Image 1: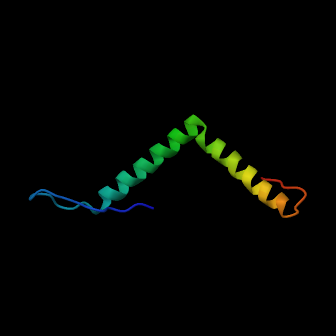
Image 2: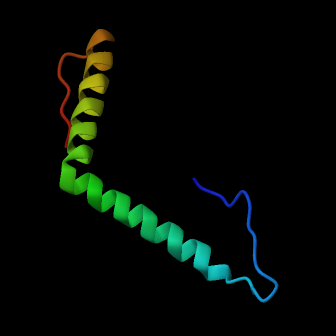
Length: 67
């Protein structure tokens, strides 16, 4: 989650209510694309599955399947 902590406008600056949302969406899309290209999301997914599997097996689950 993100938010605007501070905003300054010049004396002729009118607020554009859609600008912040559009810029935020573009930033998230760019970060997601970079993460996909670098394999970061695949690595994070594999690590998360390993942690969950370890926790479940420590709790007595014999077999864990991720789909």
